[in-house]
Amino acid sequence: MRFVIVQTFVVASALLAGASITVACEFVYISLDGENRIAVYSVDESSGELTAVANVKTPSPPGGLTSDPKNRFLYASLRRAGKLASFRINQDGGLTLINVVAAGADPAYVATDRTGRFLLTAYYVAAKVAVHQIGKDGSISEKPLQEIATDIKAHAIMMDASNRFAFVPHTGPNAIYQFRFDEKTGRLTPNVPLIVDTGANTGPRQLAFHPKLDVVFFDYEQACAIAAFNLNHKTGQLSFRERLSSVPDNFRETRSNARIEIHPSGKFVYVANRGHNSLAGYRIDSQSGNLTSLGQTPTEPTPRGFAIDPTGRFLYAAGQSSDRLAAFSISKKDGALYRFATYEVGKQPWWVHVIRIP
Image (cartoon, rainbow, N blue to C red):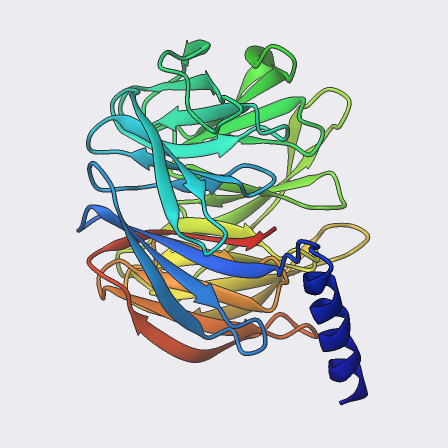
């Protein structure tokens, strides 16, 4: 109680003195493919419970979502329209549209580089990757700085922690493309080798970098598996190390992976299983990076997207077929997921993005 009184006195004194007090808040953004909107929820940081705060209209159904490193702007792929949209993130979590630009057929994934000056996009149908410049006001350049043809079903693009290398998994040709990146110019150049062949019927879809180790994890859409690769931090080259299934061995029904997310601590990584309708968890050895399966946790039907909050205490998983969002707490001890709430969020939720501001 004494702490609360002192804290309140300090805040009140600062306000009287004219100081600006900024309170950190968490927000969850959910793209709704069945509607032209992004649903926004605030997070109760003690319980993880959500409260609806805004519904943001979009020009067409939104798909992938991302934000800049400082969480000032949010970017959305408008997959059906072949466009990209940028929004200013308001202090209350709401969004203000900045601009919309033409892109290409089916932009499946958007991500900024580590400086927040460039927006990188992978195109599922247009079979390419592109880089757009981001203005100081968060706007996306009308024309891309660069476009590079790759192959069909490019499903993600992400920068490594050094901001020098980018990787693009493709579910169609069972391949991961490797690029070098110049953060001064925003240009990509093919690495050597350009393509890492992951083998037949794998379908590398998305990826997650370990925060401390030179290890990258990919989910295999077709194989329903997680694969770990070593990352040479000098050359930016990947080398395969291990693969584990994400579903029980006796599960034979139609299934596919959708999303992969790593815990902020680097201790756990999770994969979404469509068909099996579960979240597969894995423990990551802190020294070797080796994986140990934690089994599967049931979730909403067709878990296309999910996200872990920045504190690592909560996970939110969208059910594309149920129009609901499942909320889980994450055990710090063993990474186990415990469901504590379910929310009706809107038609066909695809992407879940969680940020903390300021």
